[in-house]
Structure formats: C-alpha cells, structure tokens
Image (cartoon, rainbow, N blue to C red; front, side, top):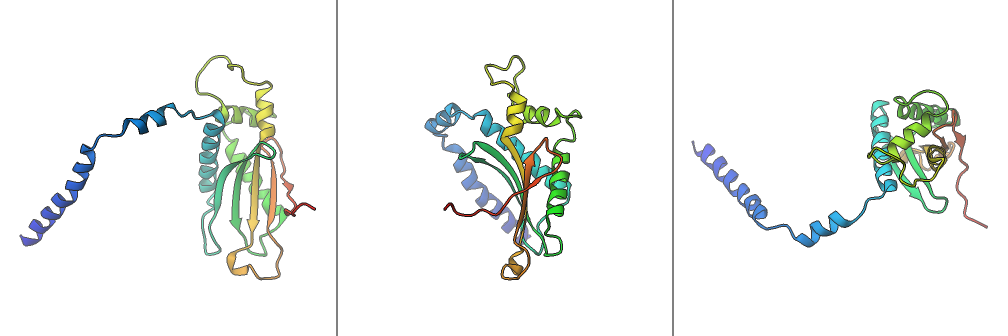
Length: 196
C-alpha cells in the first residue's frame, strides 16, 4: 500500500513540470521564422537520399561491430557542386581491397535503384524522384536535361577504412571507390594529398 502511494506521488510530481511547460505559449517569433525559412529542393533531396542510403545499409546488414562504427550520410561539396552519398565502414586487412569496395558499391547502388525502371534511365528516374518536387505538373523552369544533370551531380562513395585497433599496423591504408548511380563499377579514388 505504501509503495503504491509512493508511485502515485512520483507520477503526480513528474507530471507537474510537463503540465507547466505546456501552459507556456510558443513564441510566435519562432514559429514565424520556421514557417518562412525556405527548404530548397537540394536540401530536401539530400535529406531523402540520406534516409534511403541509411535504409539500404540497414537492409544489407551492415552495422557497427567491434572494429568500429558504420558511418553513412550525404554531404554537399561546394568546390565541385556535387552531392556525395557515402558509406564508410571498418574492414580487416583481409577484406580491405578494391574488389570488396566495388562489391559494396554495387550492392548499395542496386538496392537504391531496386524500384526504378530498368535500363540506362534508372538512375535519372530515381534521382528525379529524390530531388524533384512532390507537386504534379510542369517542371517549373527546371534546367534540362534534368535527369542527366542529377545523375552527373550525385556520387555514391564507399570507403573501407582501417579499424581503430589496427591504426598503427602495416596493412594497406583505407580504400575508397566512388561512382555515379548510372555506373556499373565504381572507380578507385586516390588518397587525398595537399596541393603543391
């Protein structure tokens, strides 16, 4: 009986701050600013692509392990105006190779394009769905050929990195491969070197 009274008292005390927080009105300056700040189709497309890449990685069973975390995301590269969808995961020395990188690129690419119509237009169709407006009707002044331009803009990159435990070992360095979604095979990306 005493335990139930103590639980009831705890519930009532914890609900009081929540009720007080809901009584305070929302500042109209906040909602005004949020409702007038535009989200571009670039922002929207990157968010949608990020979500789909994450879902594909989960579906492929790639998850954090004892070698380190799996890193997934999208980013915009201002220097060449490309959108990069990336997967970076730790791999042991035996598995860290260009063929393995290309295999993962193909699996990820194929998973993203699984619902697209077949043929050479699959990547363009998919990216128009991701980066296009959800409203129906004409393109609204969009540049043409839109699908081809999107296919050129978006890169899919896979990096097989050295596990933290092997960071000071003598094995091969990280392996990176990347390609457009209309490419059957990813190209090797050379390690970055400072200019000069």
